[in-house]
Image (cartoon, rainbow, N blue to C red; front, side, top):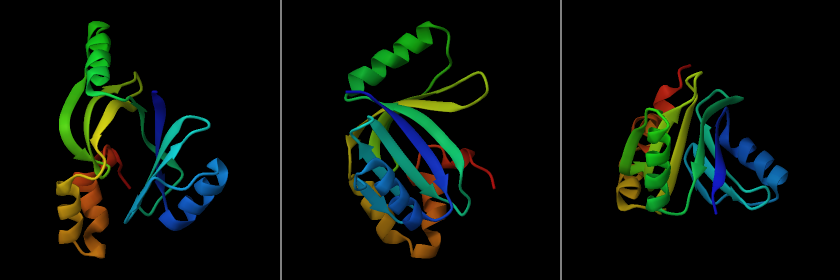
Length: 153
């Protein structure tokens, strides 16, 4: 099953989690400092929340697929249609190890086609253990999340 991913910037993570829990009638799949993700069954959606002190805007979009082979197939298909892609295999992103490919729409909006290969990889656990709470948002921006580096205040 493929599902659309919607990654949002939020001003405050706890209130955002409460709102989206109520809206989609589901508990978050994963919660970390400044980060949460929901695996919503109805409608099929992967909702990602990034706390960054500002909210109400889009971080990035994606399509989650089940296998690395599906990522490779979509990469080949899109490249064959003339789209430039950035491929990342085995990257720790959004507190999970993923294989993915990024494409931009004509306006520059980033889309990722990805699969999670390890939902709780050791490098992400080690990274989070090494930082104190004040450094978490910087670590998230630098190493743990998909397109956070593209967001500017």
